[in-house]
Amino acid sequence: MAEVKLLGTWPSPFSYRVIWALKLKSIPYEYFEEDLSNKSPLLLQCNAVHKKIPVLIHGGKSICESLVILEYLEETWPQKPLMPDDPYERALARFWVKFVEEKGVAVWIMFYSSGEEKEKAVKDSLEMLKTIEEHALGKKKFFCGDKISLVDIACGWIARWMEVLEEVAGVKLIEPQKFPRLHTWIENFKDEPIIKENLPGHDEMLVYFKPLAGKAPSR
Amino acid sequence: MAEVKLLGTWPSPFSYRVIWALKLKGIPYEYFEEDLSNKSPLLLQCNPVHKKIPVLIHGGKSICESIVILEYLEETWPQNPLMPDDPYERALARFWVKFVEEKGVAVWVKFFSSGEEKEKAMKDSLEMLKTIEEHALGKKKFFCGDKISLVDIAYGWMARWMEVIEELAGVKLFEPQKFPRLHAWMKDFKDEPMIKENLPGHDEMLVYFKNKH
Image (cartoon, rainbow over all chains, first blue to last red; front, side, top):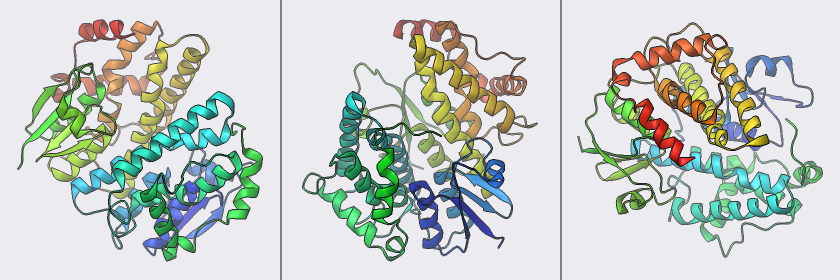
């Protein structure tokens, strides 16, 4: 099987989505840390449209966008599947991935903004979390059942990045008593051995994200 | 095979995405026109999270979000495939679907705003069109080759809705000489028999969107 390369950055939850999938599926790969203030020629060539990480390079071909990469990994390496077999279950999985992609942005907006914009973002974030709590998890350990799936991976940023953003922005969104299912899911996700071994350090993340609070990110 | 129902609204390009896929794959279905100012109990029950159309109901189970529905149709009815076989080609297809979802669809609403917001929307739209023109189509007839795919279906709103929006918002973004590939694609897409027979009327759409905005 041709070699796999991953271009990423250590504070990026999108980067980690791909790392988790690669590790869970036991796919060997070579990792390259990008400096986004000085993007490598390889990155600019492989992701000409967005110039963003993560980028997966497999046998010389590049695949961009974390969720697209996850589906590609799933189809190219069918072992240790991260998606259910049944088409309806798969549709539900894709529905929730899309939901978190679209609505989860509110948490990042909350982090990067201030004043009225921040207040609205807090409100939107709470609504999103409420929907996940009430509709997505049910009694299951993970989003699709007993095993980690693409949905858990897509939501993985909630399990580590969220607490950092909350701390720096001074807003507590996920109160365990308000979101018991989500809280349990976070604990279970972080306890999974492969996830546990592949999470960025809390303190390093605080140092990284602190100066960014309340300022719109430059791209 | 259990029966298929589609809840949709006639002016919605998201609704049409599903109609095109159903027709292209030869899947029989029953269509229900929703009144969004008076949503049916069925819609509210089947899409409690978003309360939006389209919703596909198959054997009593409901699937929401047009792109999710398309992937579901593709997996459940493999005949007349709308996706390439090769995983890399499929990744490219999904990349371009995501691109139009984020850059295209989200922007068109802003055409009906004014001042700075409208100007930014126009600038973003031009950039999006430019990227598609330069990177997505190449020399192919359709996004994935000679046959219509999920990607063409996802972009289908450009082939009819865009002209209506431009007309109503008084902006001319899509100039054929600036976007020759995209222009050719639009023509080819609208000429496909299954698409041609399943497009909302231009005049009806003008009236509908005029009243809305």
